[in-house]
Image 1: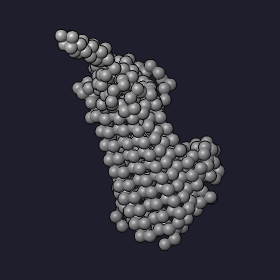
Image 2: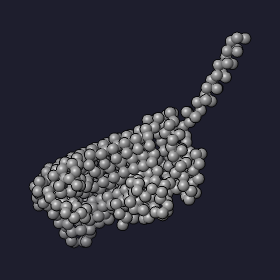
Image 3: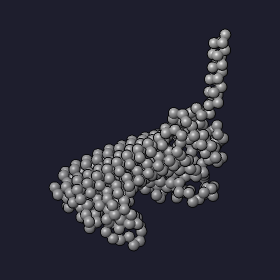
Image 4: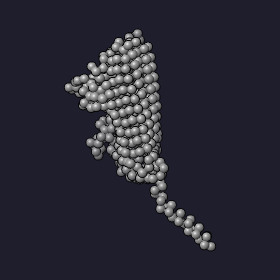
Length: 388
């Protein structure tokens, strides 16, 4: 009898203690359950922040924040902060997210980003939802901003009409962005598709980017950046830089762009540095590149000023170890290759199996080459300052 009573007490104790811990063990947090309406009109920012607080504080294995399908959630500029209790967290974007539909509706006009995420380890973000920044109304703030989010993954999301950069990755180590779709008008100002700075081991894979600025921009303090299978256009190409603005010491290395297409872009494979800066851009490659009516298909511009007045001087950003291999297609401009290096020179430039012809049948393409040193083979047009 005593054994039976002891067993009954143990069962009741386990049930009671598990009931007390039910909140801590919760693994899914649906924003609707925290008060989000999802009618595209109601400000759902407070509900999202409540859901985030509970989700980020969950101790379970990979808690999930659910943004459900069939709804459109209106969000004001909102900051999601970590660190979270779990080192692996998941945000599922099945529904749509929109910015306010007028500048008068924005509660914080001075914010630098719309949806900002700080200090979250092991964040994965995926889903079939669309994030609409309504940028034609408010072209000044970055859409999605991730700072110090190590081991971050994004997959499958669509971003449209960004107010500035669609995705900014800053101070992150270990990032994978794959199968995303970015679409903003060609004339939208400063709408970089993906802007990377002070980050390392970043992989951008199998995505399409249409923007009014760089499809992808790799800025200072970046290393081991791999871009593979990206369709760019319209846009300003895939750029290393700009580097050295305002005399900055910027350093970039191990950037590799492979199997990418440029269609109707203002630039293709670009490296750009400001006069007066310092640092280096080295160990960079563009391989298996297809160009369709791209202007400036290959360009190194060490006299980049971005329209600034009084932008003069010699660039101290050293450009070296740059490889262009199997770059094929058409140029909308007669000048298909531009190597406009500073007086300090660009070194160890290598071109192999490069063939860029004109979009105009029978018209020859040309190359401009200043202060560049290296080799070329099987290259059209010929690059006069590179040895054969």
